[in-house]
Length: 227
Image 1 (cartoon, one colour):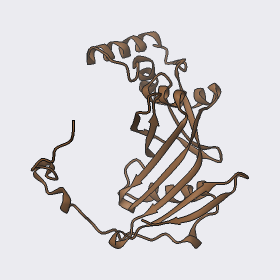
Image 2 (tube, one colour; image 1 turned 120 degrees about the vertical axis):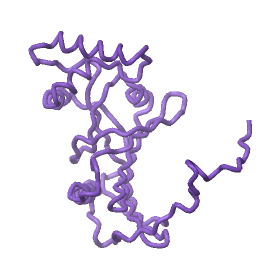
Image 3 (cartoon, one colour; image 1 turned 90 degrees about the vertical axis):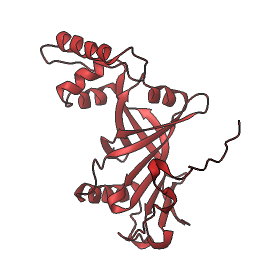
Image 4 (cartoon, helix red, strand yellow; image 1 turned 90 degrees about the horizontal axis):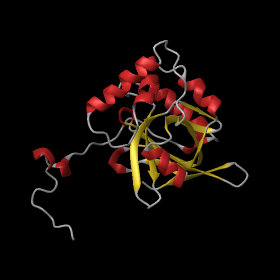
């Protein structure tokens, strides 16, 4: 069916959303100030996001995946490390995101630090990290988080909250000594970037945008993009 315009469009919660605008003036981004490597540039911006009191959970990032049928999915996950290999996060491999990555390992990441008026977009390929690396991270998680990883059949339909809590109670009993092993379907991914974009909000919507593109020799080309 066709979408039909409604008189209430643009008035979410009674607000005139078309008038919800602000001018960005927190900073600027110049070509001469960019690092030659986007991961170095990301490290620089990430450090500034960590130091900014207005940024809550600077490591929160949107992960976008596509399933075998071509349907995109997006959700927030937490960055746990970033180095020359790429960006790492951990999850249940049997979850929706895990199934999507198994079908199509090409993913996108997005960081949005509103207080700094900045965004970072990453396009790349996700691959599993080693079992040893996953276990090393899993063992430094809080005990409650390790138990929850055993209790939750992530992304699957459950009958009730009580079912989830019963699973957690069972995990508490099973691992009463506090020695919680890495679940068989839980671990990390590293996203190796092929392209990264740094966006800095500017006045009059004339934002600064720079895209890094990985070349065949693993060097990076930097282009300014129109906003």
